[in-house]
Amino acid sequence: MNPRECSLASALNVIGEKWSLLALREVFYGVHRFDGIVRNTGAPRDVLATRLRTLVDGGVLRRVRYSERPPRDEYHLTQAGLELAPAMLGLMRWGMRWVEDAPVSATVFTHSCGGQLDAGIVCTSCGEDVGSGEVELPDTGTAQGS
Amino acid sequence: MNPRECSLASALNVIGEKWSLLALREVFYGVHRFDGIVRNTGAPRDVLATRLRTLVDGGVLRRVRYSERPPRDEYHLTQAGLELAPAMLGLMRWGMRWVEDAPVSATVFTHSCGGQLDAGIVCTSCGEDVGSGEVELPDTGTAQGS
Image 1: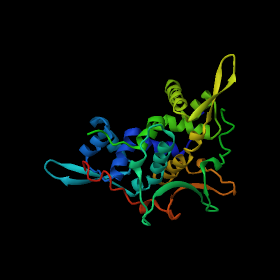
Image 2: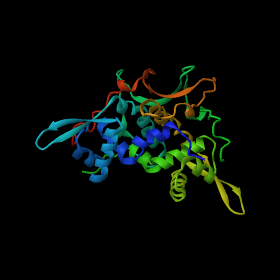
Image 3: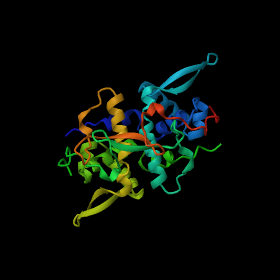
Image 4: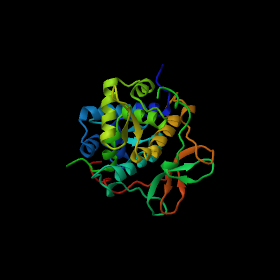
């Protein structure tokens, strides 16, 4: 049997690695240059260079040249990259709530109303904001290999 | 300078790896046993065993013994594991939308109203459901190393 086809696996092929997500965090925070991303993530330089290339090839980041001699690029979010915000906010919120000693204050995003943004699940049919405990799992796959 | 402290990094220490997230997907789908998770993810057995141990140690999964001889455990979601649903739905939705050739149909969760669930960002202050393009990035860190 082949592995299950799934859009989560497709997403993880582009962004499914710790340093990739931490690099994206930095670009969300406005840190666009390689040395700054190294400094704020602690990623090994060679690993980070590879991850940034994957993110550019995957259409999540784009390069913007800021120096010709020597040639140097900044990394900026594409529309696809911007749309990772809900998933990243969800992971941040989960870390704050469930991982011991996780820092609480560093990850606040603000809405244009001036208040704090948060990631939630909404039902696209009835519009209700539901807690994750209310999620009903799909039938597909339940019978396979359990 | 030390790397930025962040709850995203804390979350990724527990679940920040492709096989970990795909294993969690399987448990969400009701596949609780090692062989089934191997089959549906395609993960190498030794890597998967290590990832499952990390998920158990991190409080995301718990073991439930189903055979004494030989000793065999199933993997079930804890409350912390269940609360990863919004972030995982967000990544699935992103994969469907942005990754070429990502499968579309396999990842539908249903709400108790019978409709389709989706992950969104809601403003916890005004309650408005906002698109990710509306997120205002925090000031903290913008000046550091960019």
